[in-house]
Length: 242
Length: 242
DNA sequence: GCGCGTTTAATTGTCTGACATTTTAGTCTC
DNA sequence: GAGACTAAAATGTCAGACAATTAAACGCGC
Image 1 (cartoon, rainbow over the protein chains, first blue to last red):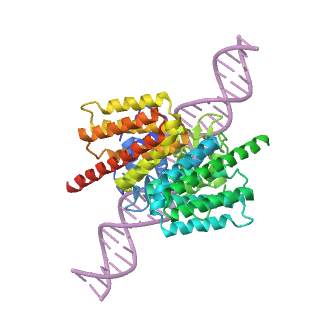
Image 2 (tube, protein in one colour):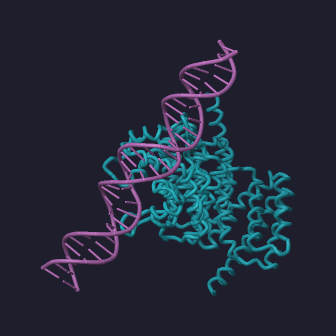
Image 3 (tube, protein in one colour):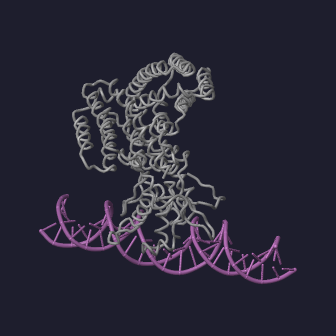
């Protein structure tokens, strides 16, 4: 765990990188205690505030946790599933919104991945998943529902579909694709006619999963893909005209 | 952008959260300059080092960049595709390694997602992608190749497959699933017989993509999934016996 | 010897003040 | 008017100090 003493720029970044590498490479195991801030300051030959800034960088990435008191210090942290999930969504959302990925690309990716889950979900979905999907379909049919709430419910429906596959890694990876699309979906105005079509397809998907019919679920998802793409195009055109 | 003055704990974390929310919600746009550290310190009524720690947290997440000098300061940063890609791989790898996801789950997720790319890749793969795949197949057949290098080549082959779909969002999401599996794959000892089978399937996949035959590529991927699962099981058993 | 309260030491969290470094903008001179 | 110089503003770093927190060590009575 060394740093380049000649390069005076970004000392705290260098220190953070050195420690991060030690953690990622497995040199430091979960719950292992890092040296105290003063010790690190001595090791790297910098001041304590500089070490602190480095540690904050690692804390921001959920790589370490700190604890005050006599037996306190910085500890290598086990990255929890929920944190990784949240982090993935944040990163994906920022990537899509800041890099202006076009709707078509994001939509294609999302549905391609979802269709990968459909056969597994048809096999393994529990009654819980089906109940969630039915509940969300019901919510989507409520009159006077705002576009934003409709999108929320749409995401919840699809999350249930994905979770139905019973594979947390799949759910984790999909979260980025599904949730990150929400800002893009929110630009669409859903007419009652649009909603009816979507709700119809959602119902077909839920029915197919209940019957454990993977290929029918896949077909309905394919239709939903095409329909969502059409809606997206219209919204983009309307936006361009404005 | 306010913080709770009563809660004295984790001031820097609170400040970081306040600023992060402002960025994510879109209140601050790309390249917008944040107030200077002294100004932020006044605003939040804390000292400059505390503000600095908060800014370091944001810098660690690639949300801001800082620039020294008269017109310097902290600026909202455009998250680049490459950074998001790298970040996603890091998070996914840590999640898989630290949470001891079993091989079967990770493998299933990886190949399910890859199969989602196959039809698109069959349509759109360029000669470049095909050339990369052929080159990696050739590399995999080289005698005396270490297991680790074989895995590297395997990942490169599959990355070419995924990239062939021509959808950066898809490539981004898949990266987490494919690359993060590498540590798990590295626990497998590939005999010559194993390699021959895998190379055969890779060749079938490359052939299918070259012929733009998506369903054949899918079928080969399905076989590869099953075969990899078998190898993984054997490796896990060998590991357990040891 | 044992249980309980107290002290004490170690560690992080924060503050104050200072200086170094970097970059730009303005100013002054020729 | 062009170029060199200077000043200012901002981040980067440092030193030292104190507060807050926590757990272990200690001492005391029983």
